[in-house]
Image 1 (cartoon, rainbow, N blue to C red):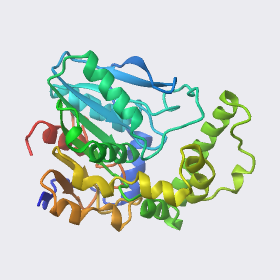
Image 2 (cartoon, rainbow, N blue to C red; image 1 turned 135 degrees about the vertical axis):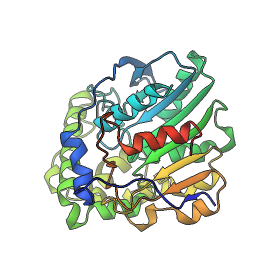
Image 3 (cartoon, rainbow, N blue to C red; image 1 turned 60 degrees about the vertical axis):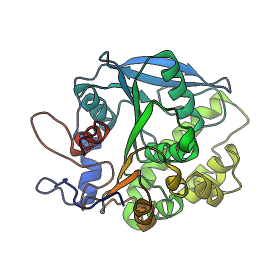
Length: 322
């Protein structure tokens, strides 16, 4: 029954508001001391995935995945990479397709349940480098991809991959999409749709005639966006079909390694089905922690080392310290 009953996260004064937790890091946080080396990895469909290495010469490696419309340069990714390096891990920050600063060659994008690219990157790294241990760390959409991948792989997972830690994960995509379409999240939704529109425009130049943004201004919800773009481009019948098949929650019971999910109780993006309490109770390897506060990819902490609670929590779990 691996439910973490007492979370150690306590928000700073004035940071009990979930929207402050969600917005503050993306606007005000700067993470120094991370030095990346980029590598481009080819994919089986003649496309590419860009990853950014932060090596310290360790025998352990953690693959870090960002959230929707993020990238390896986001403060939450850099903060996690810095914490991993500090505590003895090489880190590889993966950029989903078209998130690395260069648009990909094919029509397909990335989505919440796309696990082929993480498998390609992970196998490339483990086949080339002689790591004794590997771990997976993800945020939001990237966390869903990791949990779904672990469920798909089950006991077939590469034996070097020992643990995973994910944060702020919409593991039930249907309820998550509905929650993001609620009036209280209107500004977040508009921002995501605006960023996704830019990707559509880039794709129009890369694969002319195969995708269009005509009438994009009429799209007001993720259902409308996923019905028009995500579902048909990636082989789903509809937005609902995509959400059902891409959600990680149904596969949690098949996860075979210790995996920690931390979803704040006040996360403005997550609805009740995104807190898989019964799945955690029934599992010997899936750990669920629900801090009262933290917002979405927040968990703000102030201190001289500049680390956030989520970074210390993730690396402590990976290092077997709790």
